[in-house]
Length: 198
Image 1 (cartoon, rainbow, N blue to C red):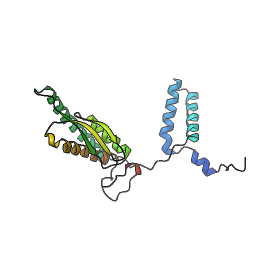
Image 2 (cartoon, helix red, strand yellow; image 1 turned 60 degrees about the vertical axis):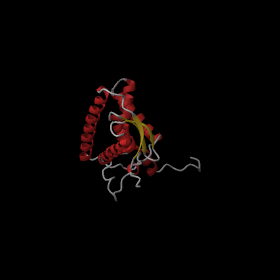
Image 3 (cartoon, rainbow, N blue to C red; image 1 turned 135 degrees about the vertical axis):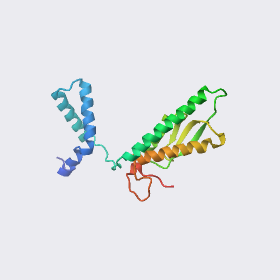
Image 4 (cartoon, rainbow, N blue to C red; image 1 turned 180 degrees about the horizontal axis):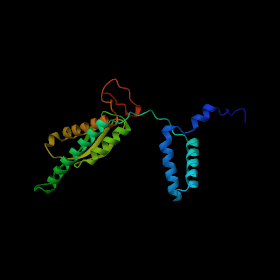
């Protein structure tokens, strides 16, 4: 060992070994390895475990802050709201497609979000895009703004306010389901789901 090399201590070695939070990643890597070999023989499984351990030790993953546990009540509320919104919007768009008259106009609407979390912005954007009549066409992550293409189904003067209100309702339910406590003040949550207060 050269004098410039730091000795590998027990704590340094422990820092390079996988921890419990990396077990799902290790399991997925072993499954992927077995899939590549097309076999689940003991030799292939043991080889996959060794390769996975070596990859985690050589290329350690960054430590992420702990995320809050999803809320069962919030998840049920999100699923119920999404189902209702899908049925309502589907019937509305179906009526616009078959009714006599001109094609309804559309608009591009900017809808700012309260959260600055990449995960919460992505979840909100995906669920909003599932609803017929609205489609996210761009996301400005630093400002937390969704840009949506929306059908004008009511008063053209109010389409922006209506779409923004709909996006806000969806975001509130996403936060209640995936980041419970983030909508109330004084609650510490992980950096990835902390809201940017206005």
